[in-house]
Amino acid sequence: MLPLLLSLAAPLAATAAPAPTTTPAPAAAACPAVPAPLPADLAAWRAAPTRAGSLRLGQPATMALTAMAEPEAGYGGNRPLIVPQTGTYRVLLSDAAWIDVLAAGVTLQSSGHTHGPACSGIRKIVSFQLPAGRYTVRLRKSPVAQVRILVAPE
Image (cartoon, rainbow, N blue to C red; front, side, top):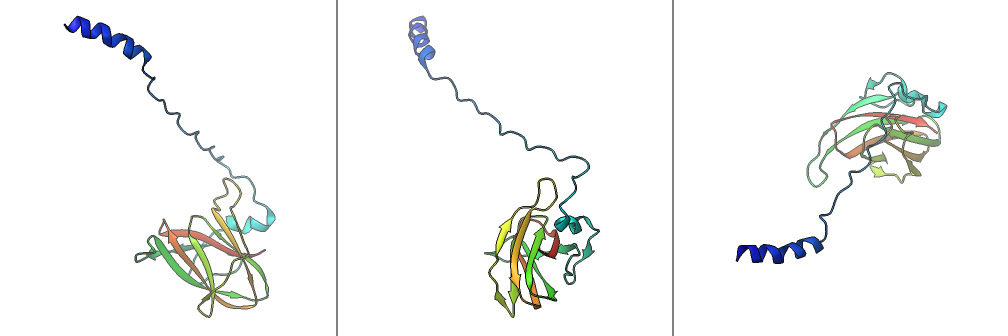
């Protein structure tokens, strides 16, 4: 009886669909050991960072973030910023995070969003139109507890 079942099963196995195959996603291109030069307007990113107690225009800083309570999740923090003259200012970050600029506790609308050049270490750039004054830069929902940040005029 077993030989009969095996002989009947053989044609069925031959017509069965082949097992699906998966193709791995292409690997991301590796960044060179020596990074390419940045455009002049982003060159300050490569300067030695300070520890951010407050943010200084044109000076990169390392900003330690604290764990956020739910529902925000991730890490976040605030730092003061003084803008001496009206203009467009960019906030550059090394990692993903929500970037807000607040004036007197009110969140301002951003004027642009982009990413940094490939392999630059700049993950995100958000622009804001700001009159001269005092502001708070707020980072939220970062997956990491420390980021590099730079605020610079456009």
